[in-house]
Image (spheres, rainbow, N blue to C red):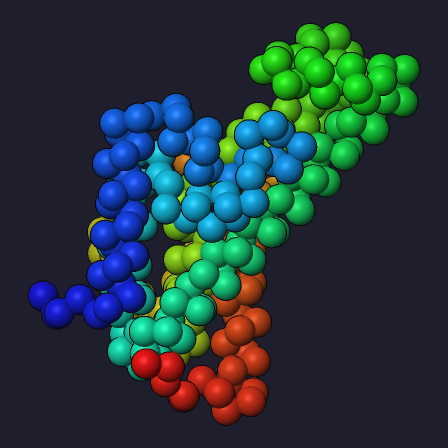
Length: 247
């Protein structure tokens, strides 16, 4: 096994420490460090970064940390530690912004429907702040609209996946012909084929609500991280900036 590069090593350590702390303190960690919707009373600005170190279980953190090591290591060796850190956290912040923006759309859509029926916004927010909802709301708007409305307010985002999707895009653009050996595919697949398909599946699941990758996934955070990763890589390559190392 190759020696861990500096940025990867430190990210692994911090993620594992957060995971252990979450196992010990549970709900308190999720309340403080997950990314909540801005109108939720649990929201704090630091969560835009801290949510990247939170995970929902052993499989979640395990897959993310493996992907970070496997795809991030060659990028850090090419770019240097500081440039990799910049890219990683920029992709993660981009993922958080896209995820929050989509949630804002869902929240506004649901709120507008309820307010137009004569319910005051203050009353609705009071119900939500108490961790409740009114079943009558489902007679005012569609089930999908109300489910998305409640989910945007009540469900926090956790995980490094958004940042890692940015790393995946950078890896695919830097090493497009690298052959990936995947447990669920019996033949090697080139990065330039696998990574766009993976992002496309997330986009499909996010738009349709029909998840092919499992439940409880912040699909638009993945798409956001990939989008910001692509924009950074495109800009760096266009400006001949991609080959510069930041040690």
